[in-house]
Each structure stands twice: as C-alpha cells, then as structure tokens.
Image (cartoon, rainbow, N blue to C red; front, side, top):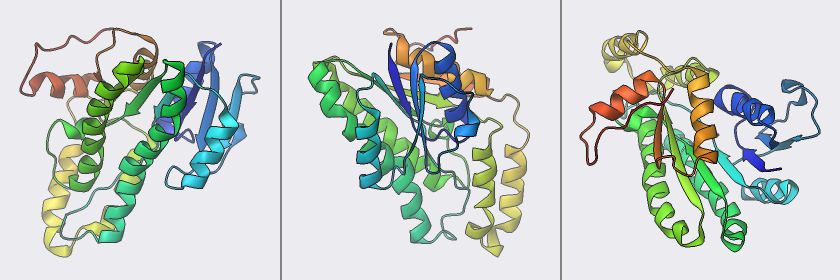
Length: 257
C-alpha cells in the first residue's frame, strides 16, 4: 500500500485530495496547523498530523511521525490580494514564508529518503495566476512563480535518482482559500487605489470559466500516479484556457477528461 503526505488538509483542495486518495486505497497522512479528526470518516489508513510548514521543528516532527512516504503533495498556502504600494514588508515576508519557503522546506525534508530509495513523487500545487499577470496579485503570484522555477530545476536534479517533480496549476475555484485572500485585501489597498481595486475585483468575480475542486484533485492524482503526466498540469477549464493561450515553446496540450 502506498502512502501520501498532503499539506494544508483543513479545507479545499487539500481536504478533498486526502479523501480521494483514501477512496483509491492509499494510506493518507493529512496535515494541518490545527488537526481536526472530525473532517474525515474513521479509517485505519488515515493519520491526521499537526504541521506548520513555516516552522522547521514542526516539519521535522511531522516527517518523523509519518515514516516512509511515496508521494508528497505540497498544497498548503495562503492568498493575498493587495496593491504593491499598500502592502507592508511583514505581510510580504509572511506569504513567501508559507507559499515559497514552506514548500521548499517540506520538499527538502523528503528528498534524502526519496533519493536513497530511488523513488518518490513531489506534487506542488500552484496557481494559474502565474500564467497571466493579474492586478493585485503581485506578491501571491510571485511567491507561486518561484515554486514553478524551483520545481523545474529540482526535477532535473532528481531525475538522476528516479524521483519525479510535478506542478499542478489550478484555475479559479470556489474554496475558503479565495475567501481568505479576499479578507486580506482591505489592509493592502490604499484609498488612492480603491476605485481601481473595485473594478479589478469585479472582473475576477465573473469568470467565463472556472475550476471545480474535482478538476484539481484528479490532476493531483494523475501527477502522483501517472509516469507520463507532464511536468506542468493545468487543472480546470480556465487554467487550460490560459495555458493554451500562453506563448508556446511546445505544441499546446490537450485536456483529458
């Protein structure tokens, strides 16, 4: 039986991904800052562990408690909608600590075992805002774009040891993640930007296509289990549209049903 460790399982993509892997017969280690066992039905293939990806001691304790794993899904992250001018450096550092450095720290924690076993898959959950610039997303997109570059370089290093590194790129989905990003918006939007921000946010509120949570969980499953999965896998109709509208260095991909 294979084992997956998933970060950020208290809601949204992380929670639903944990449920999918359980349904598929895997052993699941679901992590979150404050564990809530009542989010899941009882299962002898499930463990819920505390994990703060910005705290090295917490990472070490979770990895030690988890034992050997086959797949790491780096899903934990925070959103931010803010104007560059109105965002203080403490907020900027916080989003990079979680979205960028937290993902890197978790990845580094599993690499020795994956390398020694010459097997393992790392799936980094990203965002379609890295494929097209959006106003008010400067720091969120930058924190996530760094992980794409990190993943691509790491994939070249780990190919030597038969370890795969994949990036799943969801579009806009209805999750608490979006609500949390909206809640941070007011603090980082100065009065001079109020009209502009209102128009920008109104545009985000009515997309022509969106991403279902199912799109993301199935993409994560494919990235974790399909050896032929591309290194970058869009998830959701809007993410696929952005991917195929971007300048191509290779032929456009085709969405699989």
